Image (cartoon, rainbow, N blue to C red; front, side, top):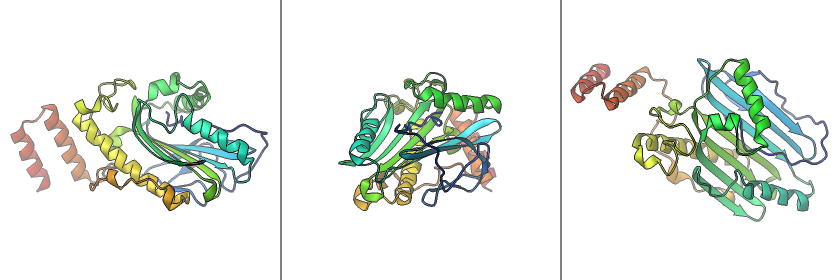
Length: 305
C-alpha cells in the first residue's frame, strides 16, 4: 500500500553484506516509538505495530524498514523509512543518479503530477527537501502498480496481508518526505506514511480509483467533508515534516515553509475521548439524514450534560 510502496529506490552498485547499528526482525512488535536509528525516532500512535519488511544494499550503504498497525484485521497505518549513507561515495556519479530518481522518474518524484494534492519543494544543486501529500488507490498499488519495479514490493505486502488474513482500505492517505544534502552529512532520508482515512474522522467514500476518488484535487471541491479531511492530513503531514527536518538535521535555509498549512484544531488524529467520538457519530447521523436537526440538538445536549 503504497504504504508499502513507497517510492524508495535503491542505487545499485556492488552489493555486499552489511550491518546496521539498529537491526529489525520481521514480525517484531513495536510501540510508542519507531527508533530507526539514533537520529530518526518516530512517535507512533497507540497500539501494536509490527515490522513488515526490511531490505538492505551494500555499496553505498542503504536500508529500508517498513512497519504497520492493524486493528480488527484492517490495516490502519504503514510507515516506511529509507536511509542511504552516501557520504564520500563517488559523489560525481551518485548525485546525478539521485537527481534522476527524484526528479526524472516517469512514475513518481518531486515534481508536479496530476495525482498529487500538494507538493512543497526546496532544491538547489544536489540539495533537495520535498514533501508530497496525496491519496492512494490501494487496489491498484498492490496489484498493478504503474512502476514495474514496485511489483516486488507489492508482492511482499500482499504476502503479509494474505498470511495474516487482513483487509485494507480501498483509498488511503499518503505523505512522502525526503531530504538530501552533502552539507548535512550526505545521508539521504525518505519516509512514507499511509493512513486509513477514518483515523482522522473522514466521511464515507463512494469512489475508489485514483482518478475518481473524492480526495483527488480535481474532484475534492465537490466534497467539502473530504476537503476538510485532506486539510487535516496536510496539517498533520506538515507537522511531521518539520519534525523530519529536525531528525535529519536539515539546514535552516533548506527547510520548507509549512506553517501556513498547520491548523489550530486538534482533529488531525483520532480522538481517544469517548464523548467526542459519540459527538462525531451524532454529527454523521445528522449529515446522513438519519436525524432531524431537532433530534440532533436534543441528543447533543443530553450527551454534553
